[in-house]
Length: 435
Image 1 (cartoon, helix red, strand yellow):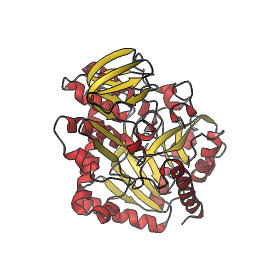
Image 2: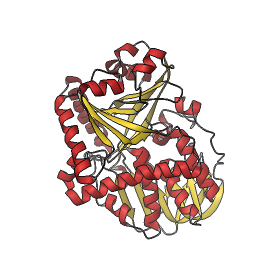
Image 3: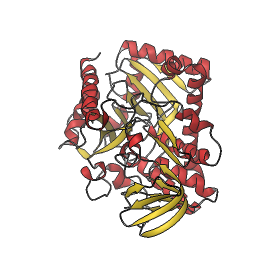
Image 4: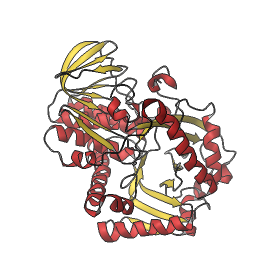
């Protein structure tokens, strides 16, 4: 199954709100002919471009190959939420991994948010970066657990930017009465992801990196130096970075066993009425709720509601994305059940069984990072820097993530996707039943 061509066969960006409003795209010609580089990076999303920028700023010869367009994958389609921590909560990580490693992962996640903000400031990237993020809990038990998590962050990790919300407070902040409570994190935030990734691309090019769009990689040679072949050319490089997240496919099969592609969907409504604007997210924060199949939303700079909800575990998108997402939107905001939807789009992200990122070094000359499991705005951007630092001798961050070693999905190549469908459908049923 060719995920790079299945749902957008022309290789252009989908007709999303982001594509309609993003900052200008850099001009990046396809690769034609043979060339050499010190580093070849496959994938021009958050990870690949962050790595390219770091290395180019240090004088290395870097070539980035992108099958479609800069930010074409999850980096240019996601919910734009700049979250704190990892995909799993800190108390859960402490139980799983012990206090020292859990604390190290927290600090890396703090570094990730700071890294995004520093890139925006240093390179003047206009991407509507704003502060504030709410975790909304559907049940009283979830609200109590969120309060425990907030106390742990404050008391044990010294994180002072989080506060606990009761049912009335979360309703005031979100405009929805669906939730039993939650937390407000002013150290997290949200941004326009396609504008951010295009800004990264421009910064990398200015630093000396070369980006080739519409240059799909067909193979990567095992011998050193590695020959990376595209449809119309090749790059011979001493180091290769795989920055593919949900699109490993047949290109790096060992990593594809540990990073599963799934689809997620977002809509952008028409601009909100003055009344709805005043009621819904009056503090202009982002929200994600506690469903296993998460709902997440925020307002755009031009006062639309950007709402993501609903995953599918089959590779082809549904025929009516707007209808799929509207069901979830109407549960959160019944007053918007008939609002016009101006944009509806899907995207493919990479998840792991543990919901923790997958990092791997192959033979000392090839590096892989992906599987950000819906938490990638901060972590995927950090991942590129960690890959680049690992290459130049700063190993700690990369090795911390590599030690997590998410297990492979069961079932092998032919059976793992049906097994995932069964498992995710069970969790989606639990969401509907409220258990």
